[in-house]
Amino acid sequence: MKKAYLIATMVLLLLLCQTAQAAVSLTYSGGGDADRYQSATIDSDNDGQINFVMETNIWNIVSANGTVTMTWDNGLTVDISLTNIVQEDPSGWVHAYPELWYGAKAWNTLGPALDGPISLPTQLGSMNDFTTTLTYNVTRTDAHYNFPLETWLTRDTSRGETTVGSDEIEIMIWLDYNGMQGAGSQVGSLTTGGRTYNIWRSDAVGNGGWEYFAFQPTSPTRSGTVTINWAPFIQAAQSYSNRANWENLYFTAVEVGTEFGTPDYLQTSIRWTVSPLTFGTTSNPMLGGGTTTTSATTTTSATTSTTTTSGGGGCDCGTCDWYGTNVPMCCESCSGWGWYDGGCRRSCVCPSSCEGGCVGSQCGGTTTTTTTTSATTSTTTTAATTSTTTTAATTSTTTTAATTTTTAAAGCTCDSGCNGTSRSVPFTQNGSGTYCWQVSGSMNYINSWNMNKLEINDVDYTNVWSNSFPAQIGGVWYIYYDGSRPWSHFEAN
Image 1 (cartoon, one colour):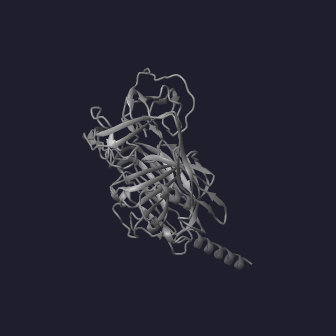
Image 2: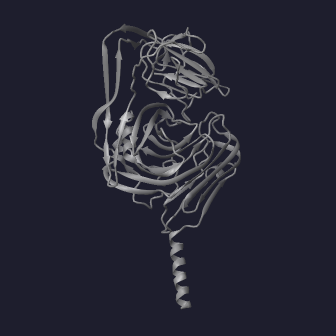
Image 3: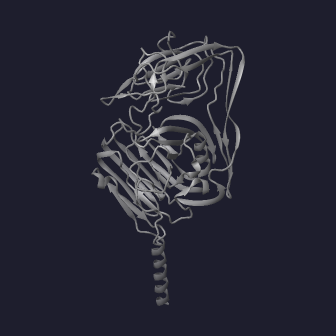
């Protein structure tokens, strides 16, 4: 009996050893490149194949006090506690991205991690939709951060790139965040899997100038179990993209991690855990088929419309003092803060002496004609909408763009009075100051961040994106701007 018991115990221990990998830890402690770029492979089922790769990925920190600890023990725990952070790029909005990933990440030659049901990299045109399921918990959040899934869409399968190219694409699906928003500007929204996401896009990010999309949930959650179908996000991004031939792009990897930091927030305390990622297959094409449906309607009545035509550039772009560096602000640079976009990460700022705003990549030289009409004009735009059905559930994807409505309002309140300076849309204001503007014509949307106050006709729009405004008063909107930071930002388009 004792012998049989011992044999059974040994068999059980052997089975346990075959199905669970011993704990693996990485610790960054403020050192150089060898410390910043640590990694480990994870064979979670002990079959000799790589399931995941984990990386410290401290790509924008030269030195810091404290540690970033990553521990795999049948799931990943990340504990970040840093002070006195010195950034490689002092104006960068992201310090690092400690992460876990599956697939063949383009930026290095680690792994690949392919012990799973999804073969990566695979071209989108020959790929079916798949699901990613994870359980996560963000428990300490004294930080500006996001917690996303992400992937990179590349033109080939080469790896170890120093940058991603201008015809390639980054897609992030945020699950939780605090004090951050997507790079560029908001272009629409997506509702899928019971969540609504605002879609942020930047046309040129990083040294390579790749296209960037971030899906930012309107209701972030600190913890939970989520299943993401990738096709609705891929198809929504494609509908807003100006890059061609998406069918030839390779889906390279599934990554999960946390970006953290701002140019002036040089300390971080955050802790999160995530379960092993699991994947499910479907028979639905990743790029789908889809139909064309109405996605945006702008209705105006008895309004003034303004048509602007280009007459050639007349002035140089303005400049801004960003952390002691006088940087040109060109008209075609990105709108929004962006991380690693170059320059001041802002839209064009034209000198007040150069009337007319942006024309191409220069300022001024516009010819403006104004026409008043009392007719009612209805403008309808369309976008591809795809309904995706999986074996487990039905995912309905709706892509929406800006919608402008007009409602009744009375009275004018700028905190500094109602004699505002006239401004023409589009325009952007950055930095500290207090202004009252009169804006006529039409606006598709406004956006602001790091503001003390932003009001339109006494209605609060502080630090939000919106495409719905109160009625004009006497044919104009009164916009009140109160910002006290170098990175305070407002844009009207």
